[in-house]
Amino acid sequence: MTFGFAPSSAASLSTSASAASASRLLEPAEWAAAGIPLLRNPREVVSGLHTRHHPKPATAVVAVLDPEERLLASASFIRRPAPADGWMFRNALLSQLRRVIPHDLRRRTPVRTAVLLYCREGDARWTEEDGAWMWGLRDACTLHGLRCGAYITLTRDGWQVLGEGRGGRRPHADSAPEPFATSQSPPPLPRTGGVASEVLRRAAAR
Image (tube, rainbow, N blue to C red; front, side, top):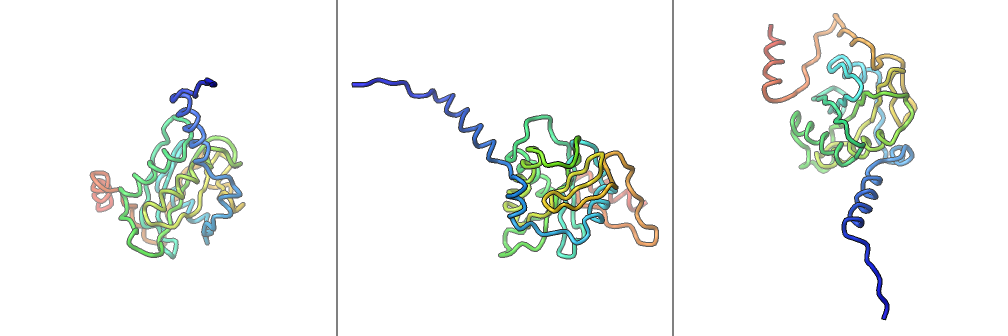
């Protein structure tokens, strides 16, 4: 008869949790192979979100676009100081999406696209934090009935659409928001819901 010791349940849970956390990110090759739709005019999308939300490092801006890449809704929030985890990012993004726009789960094929702009420190090269945001965006889109769109980083060097190789120097993390074109009427305010939405509507009416 032989005797042995089974690993403790705590150690087992810790190992499985670490493995699960490590898998909740997407490598650049996986992202590129996922068939993410290309933005027709990424600079216009980036500039529009930058003007509306003026993100600083650690700010995420999630936006929903219609088939013509017109902005339907957007929301921004500050990333909590915790280890990067795709599941937590997914929950944060899903919470914002549910707050600003109804889901499209009844549709057979998604027609609206969610994109994510994340302002962070460092350069434009992919990081594991980016991989966690990519995983979170893809999963949040699935759960809200949206197409998963571009993931864009905004640093002090400029902006970069990861997986596409497209980017520019402006706007960047330290630049002032560009004014809306005076020849056009101001774009509609993004839906934010609740008291904030009422405050924005009143401000726009003045």
